[in-house]
Image 1: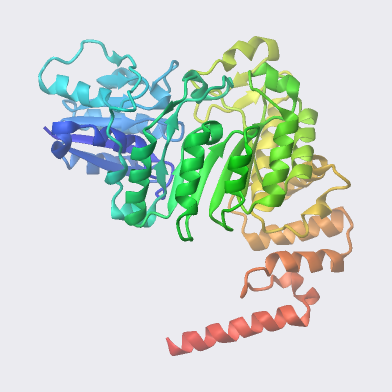
Image 2 (image 1 turned 90 degrees about the horizontal axis):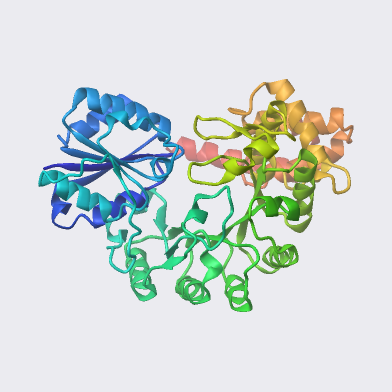
Length: 502
């Protein structure tokens, strides 16, 4: 009996902690089970070939928002080539209705947490006692009983991929756009066992830990103990945590302030700064506490901060979103991720559909198409806004010159106009090189906004020449000062000598 666990990650550098949980809990079936990971960039028939080369009797596939469509294609190929092979689906996109794949060709779907349910179903298939029902209803996993997956990260994983870990599951909040709100009770793993597992990972060479907990800082004992684990280690290392913005007790603040540069990233889901909109989606919002904590993180820590805002929330206009962005930029110079609202299966967003005229795509990523306040055209413009924002603001490539795009505190208005202009010229948001982007950026600042070329060039040279050895773009060479030119010539000469020696 051969069992294959597989999924399509969004990119090669990602790893599936879900598959490793299933694998870790296969008990006596472990020797017969193998994990095969692919990415959405692989050809589907090549994936099917590699899976079927193992002559599997059972295939378990993890279905997520980024791979629902290619998984559908993979199922069709697998079943046509090897119809006797049992296919079991699990994961968020098949755990709640409406299911995001056509499951008529699969044999079973496990709803919810499959840590031990997958093993149980495999045993039943092997013993010919498998249930007649295709849909296996969820049983919440007992976190004290399941085997942890961390020993099954291979050296190749450690060398090439993100290592995902978790200290808890669930979320105490009821934000309607988020699947985590379905499991309202936060369940914690055994803290002592976790620390031992993290130490083992550390000894194996792991220096990049990505925690997938939705509310890492909700439990002070857990948060403090885990932060202490890292603070006792010698850098370099990198720890990523998703935190709630209004819960930073002093003990947590004191520890975060001790982390060195580049060692910590905090992802903070703001989503909206409007109390009315937050109330619409059942999201608690303690505005003053949130602002206080962001100021603290910005001014008294070296943590890299990643803030989230969402376009298209029920009742939020473009003007309201713009005010949110302006306010957030005034609070922080950190990365701000601008996302487009998605309607995930299992959430309760549909209760707003009639009142606010919400219309979504049924194709992944299930983005909002329009509502009563935002037309389809405006949503499209904001998708492009988000992409250009990533290329300019979030990239950090234009830190010194970015303020030239707007007047006073109107960040949104200034960047919105720039994004419209950019798209009109490029008719694209992808495959825009840094040199081309820089030249267009310079053109906009000087020709449209009529800033002096010398002033813009001075700031852009500071931006673009931060990295030693970067070649000055041709359009900026007439403005380059001797010290910048000399630095480039020295680096260029050094490279030539190295090439000659090679």
